[in-house]
Length: 220
Image (cartoon, rainbow, N blue to C red; front, side):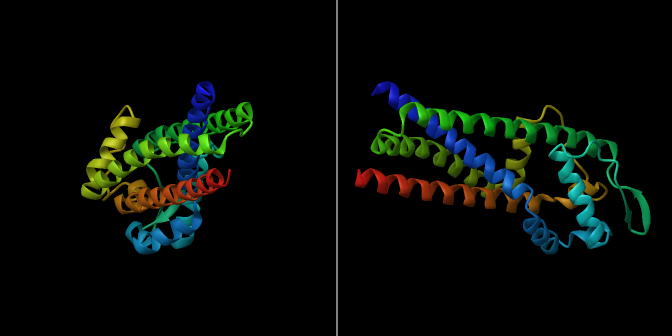
């Protein structure tokens, strides 16, 4: 039973990681979300670019992050001048962003395999035990997410800077909102909304999972 419990804990933690990283993946590349943010932030007007070209540039930027494009040598008409969209500093920062994203997706895929193997090994034998392990794992994760959410609400700028210090080894993420197109496309308000829509989706999915397992455990 002790071995089964350890396996279930590992599987439950892996599942929670899969859900979190999948929520990030979904919203970070969601066309509807970008369209809403661009409208709310008047992004095209701020940059001095047409909506069509803004969408084209954004799609190419996201393709680069997903490793579906080799470089960020992109040109567009900005404030009446046909020019290179991103400067060298922005391109170097996006190399770091792409590597972070690809590594995160590798972690998600490995976690998914661990999750599946964990339940195969235990043959889904005890729903009550699964629920208990999931509930305790969930308490830890939700406590951490809650603390981070509170921090972000109090001072998102500090939260976002410290996030970058943790995951990046340089200060290339310090961009000028007056001159750098990258930060004009995705300003701080964009990331504030992105972080919280990810958190809300994450909690919603885990809540459904929790009540599903609880119902299964009660009926066992």
